[in-house]
Image 1 (cartoon, helix red, strand yellow):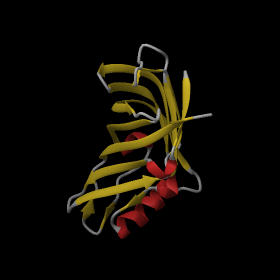
Image 2 (image 1 turned 135 degrees about the vertical axis):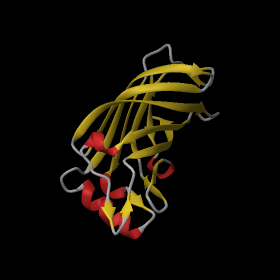
Image 3 (image 1 turned 45 degrees about the vertical axis):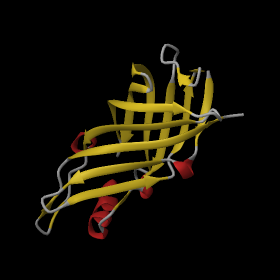
Image 4 (image 1 turned 30 degrees about the vertical axis):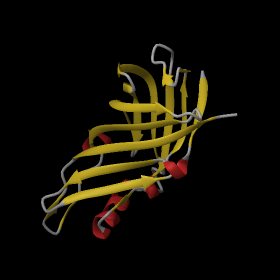
Length: 169
């Protein structure tokens, strides 16, 4: 098994939400962590144990609208909850290069079981590129969606991950 380090400068999380007025886009760069996997013939071998740990600072999560961004940071309370963490402990292959991943997401002081789909490719330098997506309801993490000035934000958001990881050592 090889441990791969996430390259923060080439990894990010994007969040898409809806409001009563317009779509909301948020993102956070500088995702950090690691991936552990066995790579055989340029592909992650899901028959072998695999896992990952991903983390980002709450203050790095920013919305594209200044008013919503201010309200988002107030509700996220980064002093009390400084990070969002995901731990992947189960990986199953769905198709070549496509996987179902299971683990936990810790966000705003709440940890929940999560399932997502991801694609992983291994390049000629042994680097793993991962893209993944899932949706979540922020109320499951004790967050109420903002309501302000006639704007109502929907609680369900789509989360998209892009990460690049390089072999350690």
